[in-house]
Image (cartoon, rainbow over all chains, first blue to last red):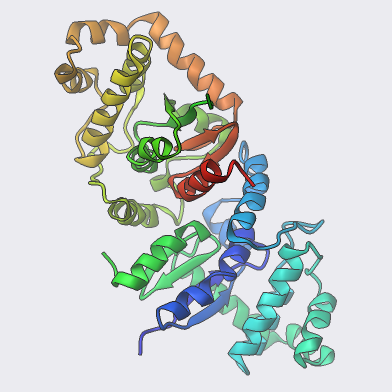
Length: 200
Length: 200
């Protein structure tokens, strides 16, 4: 049984969103599963000294254009929410709370949050919106709310972020295939070739 | 007659080198030509505040690995020279001096320099090496040497770099197709789709 592919992403990352629409079907094509691992780019940027793409000198306008163009290239809807980049903490905590009970359900919630936040441009920073998006999955709002404020869940997310930093996960998406690191949605063709050939 | 594709690159840029091996055949497939435009990333970094990839916190080791893996993905030889990243000024000046007399010859020289510098890891920073590499093309060493020290040629390169900066060419390679900007060798699939469809 091969190792699952590890898919690191930040809920506020456009290229993470785009890759999230591709990674599971790609893995399935090669008989692989995917473990989704949200992390916080903001915490990484404190170490790397980097910034959100749209805030980088000379680069902001390019990325706004490339987001739209790349989303169309992948054939997925795309719209930035008003508060972009937004805080992915509530969504990330909700994810880890849920994934310990049901990884597939957590992945479904992640897809719904990504679609809401970056597919149709809704503000998904607050726990209220996450709870609303989770309700159709049978997740009770009061339980979700309690989980997001639970110190154990906060610690769980923090530990995941620390682990990501320790592996030099410096951007989103960041994908490991059998330990081999790939940064960016634009590395998906190399990920596919790696899955097909076992590396080169 | 469609506009030429504009291909901006820095002679010390690994991804610029990789894209340089792909862009002409890709353009030809769609009946297009390519204008090559070397520029100086160092000058751009003074404005953008960025640095060479291998000097970025958390990212250096990843890029050293990705250079090798990406070169193999494109099927081209790759080796970093001892002084990487190196000064691309002599090669860039030689290019602009030559391109005003014979653009195709200048492109041939550029390909030879890229292969020497990043394909087999030779130090190509000095005018002596550029002159040696240019000799088989029938370019006289003393003429090349004079050109690289000619104020008019220096000014020509400076003007090209200023023009690149004015267009927000913040990285290498940077490709314009009918004015549409694409950054990175990893945007070549989008460049191809753009050439095929006329945009989306």
